[in-house]
Image (tube, rainbow, N blue to C red; front, side):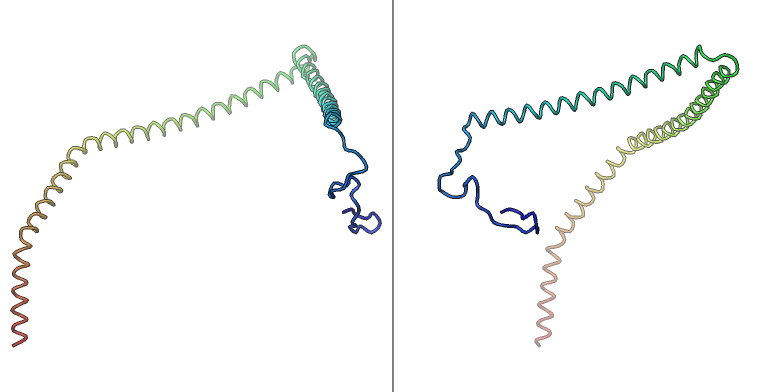
Length: 183
């Protein structure tokens, strides 16, 4: 199927390679070696394109970073040796102001970290005291549990011993009730 260029409709056409029918094709196909050579040439072309693209990208990056490095070097030279008088002082004052600002930020961070450390220490001390208290209460609680289990077993034994006589009394009373109702 092909698309018509004039109106865009799909049109059926004969297969030029005649691959769908069982008839022999008029054009012989490529041999395996020829097909391999074609594939090899295509791969070499792709590799060449990739190499060229990579080379250009690396060159652009090299130019960018070299210019950036030169700019940084110029700034460094200007701030250390360069300007005399008012500009040098303002650069130095700017550095001093930046360092003071950084010192202020670091002192604020230190205060914040100290608060965090105190909170974590307090939490740790609380958890430690709770753990000690639970460890101390473990033996009395085990004894209470053992006593409760023993009491439950005794109650079950009492129920099992008193249940058969009560069932016997109940059956006698039921018989008496039935006799009194029937008479």
